[in-house]
Length: 264
Image 1 (tube, rainbow, N blue to C red):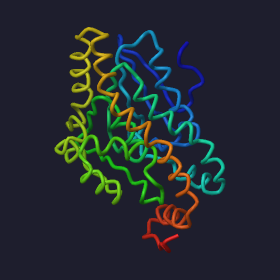
Image 2: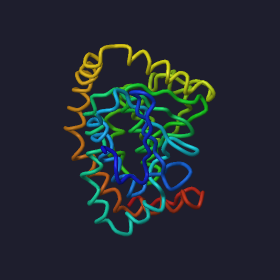
Image 3: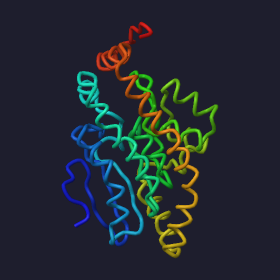
Image 4: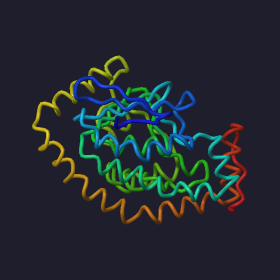
């Protein structure tokens, strides 16, 4: 069996379509250490899976994936060595997703934030509930956007817009994201699965290897950018985890108040 020992991710099939569903231990699928570990290997396992030709990446509960779980953030601040320990997996999540030859469609509902947004945007087609939100608020919790956001956002909407979004940490509505070309489609929630099924059928109606290798060729520049930047990006993110303002930003977020920042 290809998929085994997963606790935070579930798998189901409909014909040759494999649905990979994030099932975190919180309602918004915040990433904890266990989910981070599993994300680092799930796309490699999906590539090896003999029973699928197309992947739908989805989230259970109220959201697709709302980024890092706050309790996990606190653990990483209390034990900075554990942050260093996940550096390889952080790079592996991005590289394995870009290495995946099978087409992957993101089913985005609720919210996709931080790492959740990175994973969503590195899928080949992103279809969202029109009421969903997407953004990369790493800076709001005192972190460098080192998990791939700085790679994928500029390629989709250009550097000017990407810098505004990543430096403010603001969230976009799915309608706004579709209008600027960040995602493919924003549709009413009741039409979400039908739209995904429509696109999947069109893709699967084409010869398998033409599809896979066309995707592979298109991902070469993205892989090149990721390879050139990932070491520095993750290193800067680890460094930012040590800053005093990082701890204050997380505490203020939990307490729902403006942070009192010192510049540290």
